[in-house]
Length: 536
Image 1 (tube, rainbow, N blue to C red):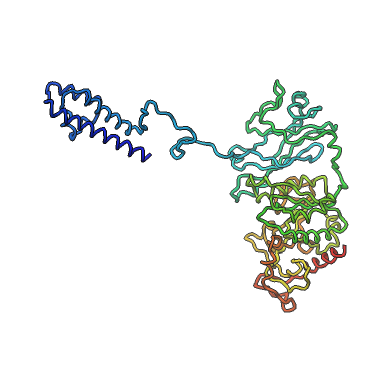
Image 2: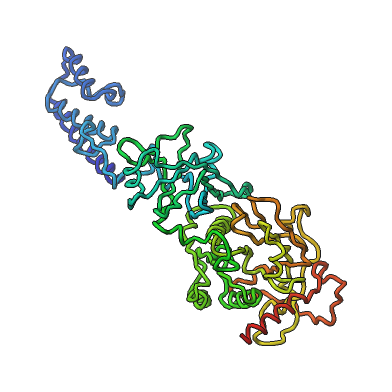
């Protein structure tokens, strides 16, 4: 653009010089005609506009009317007008065209452009039966939309399959009387108010007055996600489903007959892992040790493991899982898409409630703790004996002890597990409010839990939400979890056991570094499980 302006200025100067040359020639031959001066000024105003008012040019205007001179002046004025309008040479302002989209100057473009996606009212994760009369759906609810528009769920319905392959076809073959309406309820985890996130975890419960789909013909569960006070009818005259009604679950014919609503169930226990992300960088060697320890703890009981993959399960971990996967004792759940939805607890809250659904009619009990935590039975001979005492409870809360990875005993064997060297734990809780045991680190705090998945509907990391009461809170002297922060990560051995202690020189009544109490009970239990694993 700068080169263009320079070229135009040069062109104008050439025209001006030629004009001055012609004016000088005519000025020497023709005397001014005073009588025609007014006419000349009128023409100049027409061609030159404000230039006639410029005193520096006034002496050149007092000449006789000459068509050549006027044409030259007109050309000069026209070129100046083009520069003033910002029009390229040869194109007048009236003929200007808008630049094409590819060459548009985005820095000067005005208006609103929509980029990206808006928040979703509800992001569905999984749906399952809760009973013959109930279904549950787990998903994410927009915190912002929930705050401004309220509950996004209005109602639910069961549409009989009637031999149809789609919900639209089923609706077309049905009428208002064949659609069974249910009562909907939406519960929230409600532990995300301090986090800068977009979604909270929600659990939908849809209840019907009588069993639905019990005839084995199958059907569709439909949720009304409109925010209107009066939702539109489910079936219009054309039999097409309204957009506000979302089909979320399809039950195939005879599928209900494969569900075992009452025990004994296929597995005694189900373990639900946290969300495994690349940032956690879980070590395959460590997970193998963790599995060997707990597999021995379950004794003769049958357990199914659910590991939730958000990009953190690599080929080495899959090699560890493969033997259990081949025997149908382990399931890897793909949750990599969860990265698109920033939710409470970095997705951990969602997988907890998802795993509750998966284990509901699969196992008698479901376990929820992390891979850096080890269960220890203190006064119970076996896991079965412990849980037998609490068969009527919806949940059991476990105390959590935090152990030091800095202070360790000396190495005694090449193949010993990492936890066998760690003999020092916290003695007192470390928290601001000791009354909140679920989030208080220490002897009785930072609790995790075991659930009866048929009695717990909504749960969080450190507690159950629905029901919140009527469970069992176990003391650390009965059973407890031993936590080793960061031990599950790849390369954790390089950041562990910086200070080696000779145990016979450590007084059990004196705290090491004013925090850590000598305790060898768990290391002894781990060594025993290690010995059993080697002989199996």
